[in-house]
Length: 495
Image (cartoon, rainbow, N blue to C red; front, top):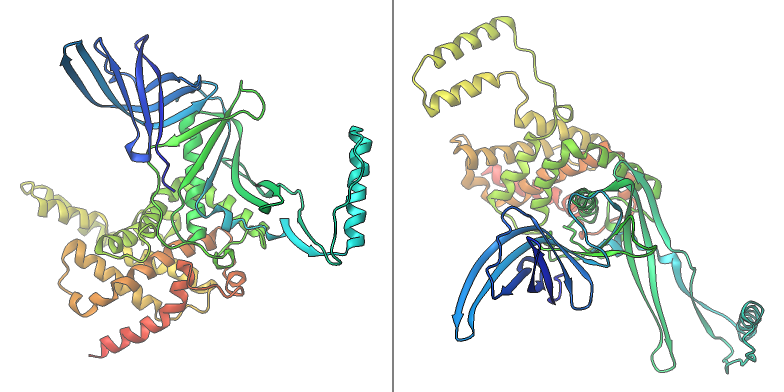
């Protein structure tokens, strides 16, 4: 979904001076280049530049940083140039400043949004009769004459005995859900063309809109959109990149918007979501469940956000695995809120006394890394460790998905030992023996982390499993391959 290079010429204002500039919009290569015969002030104390293109559109460059200065000397004199990198570019009939709280709606789509919200019932084809089509065309003509009095005579086309009727129901709203961050609606936006040479063409765009209860600033609008994109990534089983972003702000005419271009955005994996039946949640077939899970998922986002991003960083790699992904998948459990894992155990009074005495003895020694590490271990005495946190989350999944084999705990324990080997260099784990299982160790950790999250938010895995999902989603891929992986692991253990 890379943005086609877009180049805009115009004048941009810095320190109440206008400078000619060329704005190139192209993802990470987005750059504003200013040129002048006088020195161009630095934007170090600003993070925005406002300008106007030659097409009279107003351009707001937000989150700007200096990318370099250059001075050229030639026969015509001295030319100064300045390069500025904006994190976001907003273009439309009004300027936008990052701190103004005027944004009422944000519209966007993602690479898999049309598949996630595939409302097949909105479009269709029926085989009819010439009599029925004549009745429909006559009725349509009579209504036009009644409403507009155009004076046209009814001219019926030549028909076969069994004409086809292609239809669009006129329904625009596919889905709606009220959440803590705003009201999400997903809509049809069809574009229909009819021609005797090319026939009937109907291209439908599916877009999401987040409407805010009260106007918000730009960063908040983008952050809330990103939250939804992360949720859609989990449901789609691959990273979602938001694009075709538009915002509405108070003060603009009705149905008017500003276009937003992001210089940095999520990369997408190669695999394409083929079918919405593969996804654990389906907003078309089970809209109430989708709404319930989405609402609860967003409520947990402040505490779960960092761990979820860890998980999604791994998901963005698709079927590519390395030690960094394994370590990240395990560490996601360590940064969960305490309410999501097992409680800390109570340390007996005599143990507490012994611990405090040991800490005091260590503190009296000269400061070293080993001394600090030993004190850290003693202070964590009684706290839930990574193994107990992972197995606690695994129990949630096993209680709701009986198809998960009982050996999953052993897989997870080996995955944690593998992680400890890479982090601490543990000597009690035979890495060479299990190095071929890096993939399944990673998949197991990621599946348990994400599935347990959705289950606690209200997901019913059995409704999903009844649809017999294919290998296309990472959840179903794990479910379909874990038994064979366990068989292979048992063979290796027996050696």
